[in-house]
Length: 413
Image 1 (cartoon, one colour):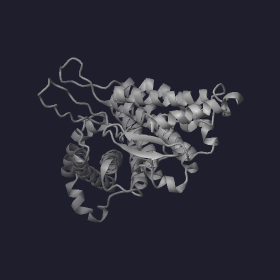
Image 2: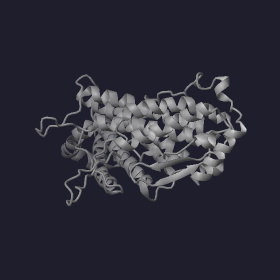
Image 3: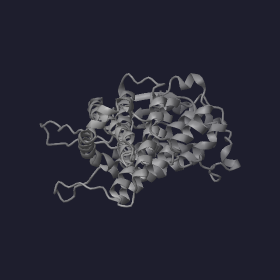
């Protein structure tokens, strides 16, 4: 999750560093360094097997040396590896084991002999790196040490683009890869690879993109109340859908539990914002019923805001512990405005609330067509140079080469 530690002189303890998080990024998994040449021998040419093994091990080295922070370099190698790996899915597998481990905890989590699983793992890593990049853009910076931490509008727009890209990677995992993985292997996959978890992450990233859009609208003098209400309502729908997807998975512990806590927190925030802006629009009406309905919206928004604060605390305390960022975007504005408006409007229309008790029902929020969609991602074309006819087919070995291989295997055991 981007956690780093400060290292001091020998004999002194490490200072515990609790990472700050704006975008929820599940635990990142990286491949375990392994020798693919030997198991691939006889399936494809030696040169191609060497290239695949070299690219995979390069991913391992870059990820381990940088803790996953060298996103541009990792993305380049991952895309190159994908273009070579893609044609292996047309081969019979079951003999080649692909090992992956959790980057943070350092333990090997899973070992699966399936090319489609390897493809899924690579694309999932690309999505997580993209989410991590978006998260880093949204962490406010204070280069001057003045205490003022600001995220520029350009960074926010770039973060939205990255979220759409990450959603596209995850959507491709669901649409084009999961369908090829046998059921018995799916049961052994990490929980974050389950269809419900992948779909929840894909939808959630769209909700987070809408959250940034709402923040930009609040900062803009040209954005109308209708625009702000629509964005808040859309954000609410995204997190509601993500919650439904994740509720089908086991979320009792680990990152899955923290993931569910994050979605609940953002769901409550977006619902509070939606009722607040809906109340402002209703309050513009001239009928007493409009004002009563508006006050009901403001009071509901205030209660939801209190619930969201509790949900935020639960998320931060869920393992692994994280710090919530300073208030930003729309919520920086709404944490002040919602209680203020709810109190003022309740006093202003208190007499109407007493007279029109029959009208004291929380109005339904309007429905809008969702605006954001995953950026479409297609699996790469087959690397024609790597998969030319002479490279694609395995080359027969001479008796001497076979004996040498056997000797090597014996010595290495």
